[in-house]
Image (tube, rainbow, N blue to C red; front, side, top):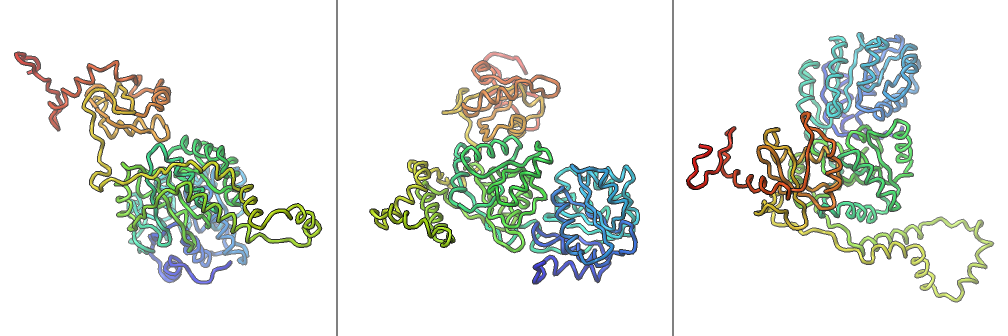
Length: 556
């Protein structure tokens, strides 16, 4: 199969599983050879004379389930009588029931479908010797905690539990305490850190230039083979559509796709008919593609641990990779947080200028021309006519005309391309919230809006920003100058996003009350009143002291 020497996790785990009887928690990144680490020892100790299910391996996604099944089948292809059956959603459950009934010593399953099979009493796990939780942290992130508890509660007490995870969140520790007996811990690298062979880079651009920056990066790396991560399904589809419209070999992968569509996209990506796959975190889980050159974080994930999973999609199987983050000035502080979490330093890289992109593309074209295989016999009879046509031209003319033919459109696009790099401010200024504007109107270039949600609905600046972003699902929604009062709030957004936001929230309800969003001008008196009142709200108090005018005793 091409194995020459064991990878680090295999070198540590395989001897332990063959010589020790304890449960195991193994922390290692995706793409480090974990399947062989637990698969080979399990196969070695399976009793093929018995048709009973002896090992259950749980994985978070269909793709990972099938990948593990394929690997185990390859490891055991010379072992007669060993049956390995994958159980996953999106496939005919009756077929899977028949396969298990015919005898399956090893079952590889996703939690949801496995629980369904157990409820139907079609899989018997009461006598298993091995239980493996692969990518356990991802299963918890995807909301499978209750399913895991239900599945694990039906397994025998006397079994070996092997838990493999890239990170060690509290949920994993909880499972280890509940279902494992004094497990040993093997860590490859440090806890929650990034893989050694991945370099981490970040580019700084204004939010409005994020997509332009993405295209520049893609053009600067002509052989790019990448996954681009976005936060939401809507943004994922919009970015993929924009890339396809601009002529890139790209497509999307998100939860709204059917299984048939998902399989089609993944087959095209694995065969490199797609150079770029735009995906959400959940949809990309379980993807196993070993030759990715780049991971591009179009948006940073909300959870830092998700960055570890994202970046771990490149630099697999001992190969190197680059993880790129595109940020704006306000997000710079988050780079420091991730550096602390993964134990790696980020390199700030300048977004390529139009001239730099053209130079890179031109040299790539020349290198491709230089390495083109010449089929002398096939073209020999056509060459005299070609030589005759090109006779008036010098070698330099031929080269210049060839380059122009292949490259004119590209040169035209980038000839007037602006430099979109943003100069970093002093470190102490980066990441600070913007100062509130002194008047009730909006700041330059922004539109100020009113919304009938405030402190009475338990909102503060942070939670209101999150609510608006999640509910509207508008790419690059920039919310600033938020002021939350008792009964309403005010905030500013870019003018081009106003109509979209109002349309998105038109029929929205919060706590059975219709959400009202309007231009702030209609509520100027309340807006100015909120500023006056704000100084008289004491932290921790549940009442609002009204400002007393001279000679007035109201509100004492």
